[in-house]
Image (tube, rainbow, N blue to C red; front, side, top):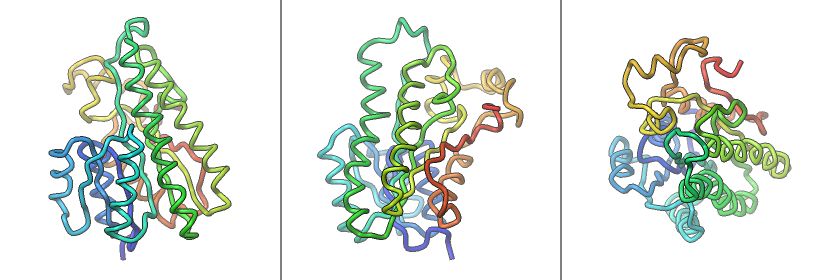
Length: 251
């Protein structure tokens, strides 16, 4: 028996990084997963690992019409949607804040905040109507509470998500809908260079672990495992939590 047997999940940004790892982990625990990404090639690659449990749906999280088609696709294929993972995210390259362009700011908030807003608005009505409860997991960041120079507006976008996570949990708890966020440390994904402003090399990774008690940067499986726990019945009384998955960096 898997911890997510008979569950259906939507995972955004699932063509790579955290999203792909979360999709794989959910499928391994018995869930059916709609793998959502704007990048078809990446989404197809994720699905190929377990086509019996994973299905791809191309979407842009900043478009309400795409969210409607996503909800419809998952419902038509599997009849329900128990779990929503708002993972899709973006960032500009780490640099002095006065050099951040309006376009970079807008894209960051559109994907990181508006995408979660639209996703929750699309998913919540069917969850309430089904009267079976459900789970929303938002991917935030340690930067939401411990911001550092160079990524001010990225961190601010994640601060909005951590705050909204608590508000959603308070509002929809009476419907037995749990809402939590995962707050990872910088991880070896495609966004490493954007977050750090330098090439992803072993030498450069070493520069970011001096204040991490456990002595390393994050791995995608760290986040995926936390998401499996939060989505499972093992976390049935946990809601409104911004869980730091950071090797102790925020201590």
